[in-house]
Length: 265
Image 1 (cartoon, rainbow, N blue to C red):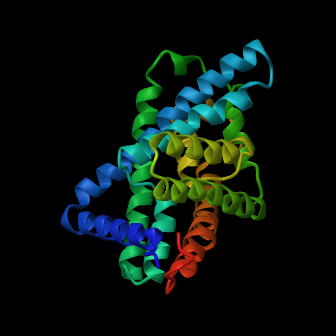
Image 2 (tube, helix red, strand yellow):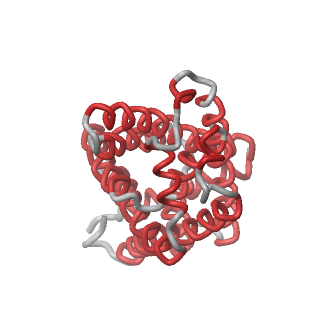
């Protein structure tokens, strides 16, 4: 007989998140801002590297960018930042297992989402004061990301978003269950690399890339980059990410481990 490590981790995480949220919404907001900031840091470095690589060997930027971007999630995990798309898994599983009230879970998720965006915008503003970002063009890798994503119809965004957060929460779940730090790093990189390479839709990743565009001169040169289209994209991606990470990973693993004492995770 073995106790489910998954359930123990979910219970601890939900308790930790709820306690911090109740005790200090300022501290919870800062941890959420760090998550958005860390992904924006790795996104910014990644798009510059992609432009450099594409200048040397056209097409290679797409292979380089996902690897650099993936380190942003590693920073989030090791530095205890609060990420909306992983919270979709934690809080959905926690609600199903009765470790947290669904109303509180939803409030925490929405609060985290908002401050992920605030953190992304803050770092994006700082990056756009640097020399690396003073030379961005509408033909560059960053502009290409924004234009490609914002040109997608809503139905496609739904499926891209579901797939993205399946990958992300495979990384999160593996990080929870593995003990070796090196193994944690490489399994996170593998899952994140895949969804980024496939250009799937991940809300916090889009916060990062869209924020970097929004405060740069290239924003006015991308026809589909407008507030109504961005809000459409964000709202659909949020729902799709919740389906992928919250239902298909979080709820499924909560169901698989509830009332089990032999075949557990």
